[in-house]
Length: 116
Image 1 (cartoon, rainbow, N blue to C red):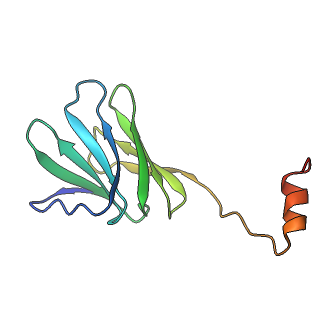
Image 2 (cartoon, rainbow, N blue to C red):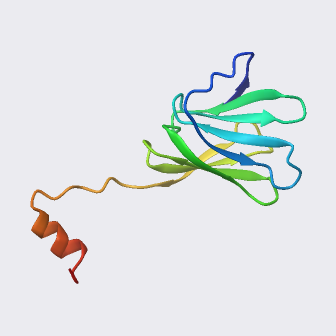
């Protein structure tokens, strides 16, 4: 969901990406409030992309043609794709699994790193 407001509500902005085609907008990964802000650099207006899959967005990149952005979500362990031409088009395209910790270090090392 994308929405605007008077108070941008930035909390722990972690990464910024500027539209490569024309530098007309920037996207900000707000890790502290689980949102991605879109800042219109010409109008100084802020809107947000938010959703249940955004959990501590940390990294952000915009496609060279400005059509979509990818957002790495630290706590959700996923990558979101935002269609920048449609306000509500957020898709979570990659979900990673937690790596289970081994109770004994020797067992993990031999399974994960056979040459060490």
